[in-house]
Length: 315
Image (cartoon, rainbow, N blue to C red; front, side, top):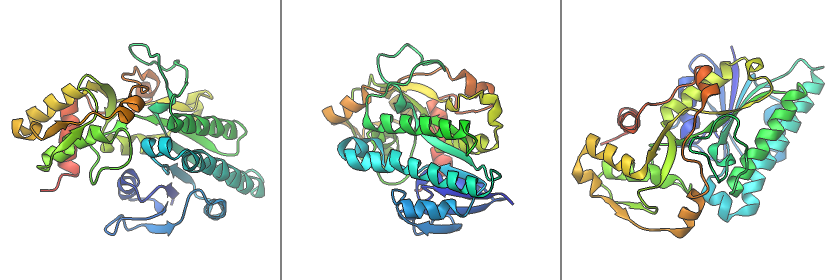
C-alpha cells in the first residue's frame, strides 16, 4: 500500500484530499486539525520546526503532498513568518529527505507534489500567460513559492526526490470562515450571499482572475502524484487549467444560480491594500502543457458555484 504524507493536512484542501485517498495509508501533518476532520492519522506540529520535519522524513513516505503555507495576505504583512513557513520549511524538508535518500544508498526517492501559485508571475502580463512566460513575482508570497519551485527542481535534478510543482489557480468557492488570503473575497462574495450573509467587495468588479474549484484542486493533486515526471522534461512546474472571469461575471453567475436576493448582499468596501496585492496577479492563462497531460478544471463559473453547492453548502 502506498504511504502518503499530507503537509498542511488540516486545511480545507488537505482534508478533501485525505478523504479521497481511500486506498492509501495516509498521515496528516498540520499545526491544528478540525474537530470533525478526516479520520486518518494526525500529527500536530509546526512545519517551520526542522526537528519535526526530520521526524516526518524519517517515516519515508512514498508520496508527500506539500500544501502547508501561510496565505498571501499574511505573508505580505508578516514578512519573516512568510519566509520561514513558505520557503525555509521547504529547504528543511528537502534536506531531510536527501538525508534519507543517502542513508538508503539512493533507493528512497519520494514523490513530492508541491502546491505553488500563479502568484509566481508578475506584471506586465500578456493577454494570456502561456507556458513560456517568465516568473517574476511582485509579492512576498509569490517570491516564496517561486523559491520553492527552484529548490524542488534542483533536488529532483540530483535524484534525491521526484518533485512536481502545481501553480494552482485561486481556489473558489472555499467553504468555511474567511481566511487572511488577499484572494479570500473571491470566495466570500459567493459563499456569504448563498448563506444569507452580507459580503464585502474590496475591489472593482472589473478585476479579472483565474479560478478553479476545490474539487478540481484535489483532482490536480491526485493526477500529479500519478504522473511520470519524465514527460515534464525537467520543467517541473505546471500552470494548471482554470476559468478566467471578472468579478462582475462572478456576480452574474451567482445571480443565475441563486437570484437577485443573493446578489444584493454583496456590498462595495474598497480596500487599497488588497487592491495593491491583486493588481500584481495574473488574469488569464493558456495552460497547454497541463491540458495535454490530462489536467482538467471547470468550464464556467456557474459550474464552480454548483460544485460548491454540491460539495460544501450547508443550509
